Length: 562
Image (cartoon, rainbow, N blue to C red; front, side, top):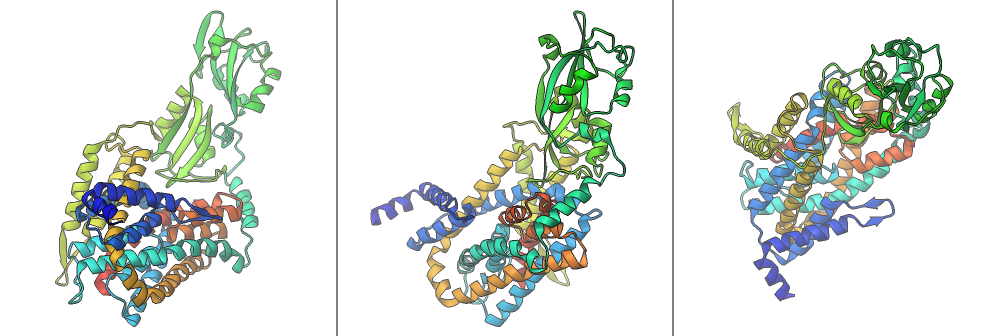
């Protein structure tokens, strides 16, 4: 064993990747419906291996956290600013009430129980399942931005943060999943029944029946077939006239007249004998023979490229329009397969409105989805190319912003590296959503940056804090666990009461927003299963973005007041 430990001491890079590999393996072990997750798994493995008292360069921890928190800002940026408008303000107040409740509980308990420095932010981070809070606190301690009591080193305080996070995170995750599944029942709501009621209401969301809305439909089972025009009643009519006469979820894509191919355009006039390529939902295309004429497959007229395209909603003319309006204006021949908001798939309904930053997966003939993308925003082309210049400049600006300080009533105040990098990432992603000509970081690349940065940071943190595990558990383990349980459950209850009974949100939306107020994706999935519907996800994005930012800043603030 001494030989292995000696080898790992001499090869720091092998030690780090060993911790990450074992942490990922531990995090993916499922016990029933629960799994620990890679972040907590990596931290626990780091704490255990860290009992052997390894020394790892703190620079690696700073680099890892910087990349992670900047990538988080890139992810939540559009939703964060979008939440400042209209109904988003309700979700913002719900997030602020939740975060304030958690902060006050920790503040009061830390003063009452005389908790050691670093334990308070660790409780907030673990009990409210927000890893960026953990990073903000440790960075603030390591940079000397907070004053520690005499005799307490920065290393000890940072170790306390990590160990406390590990103690409270497990209940923070499991407790929230169970609590949010039971919470609506405790107040007399059957979440599945409420979801069905809401589904019916939202399906009637359009001001008037709109048969053309089906052109841009959540039903994506479509087909492309060819028919010979034998109906004299259609001859002599333009495609524009036919569109008004037959407002069905079908679209004429191309016409073959003799040996000549004619691309569909509003002014094109049909003639008897034309071969018409028709796209649309399978059941409607199959019925076209009763209106146009017999089916007559022709390879030349059907030889068109269809594709699935991801479209990011960035155009102001598309924001707040319903899917019905989008379908009527620009969506003929396009079929919506999926809609994601803040990375969470939403349940699509006819009256649903688009938000800036929404990601739509649309299928159809290339020219039609290209046209739709021009009106909605811009296509997200799958590319391995990442704009490293913008990434590096953003990291520099975030670091400078975090280092800057201003005096308020004579007291120097600064955001710290966590706040500076987070806000810089938010602003850059927000600007990119409006001007997509710079800063391309594909979603997959951003996800890799976030994962690598976080696991590297957590691995180094765990290895450094391993020596403090037994000491913290013996001196304050039970107190930390009980305070953590209170910080998990009481703010979650406050989020529900505020959302349901002050803001008067629908219970399905309110419970989904609660899972964003205490950012727990696993709890959102549990609520979706309980509701047998994806509708709770409609309330998740804005609270998630706001709480992620606020809780990160609280990791620094709690160190100032405790």
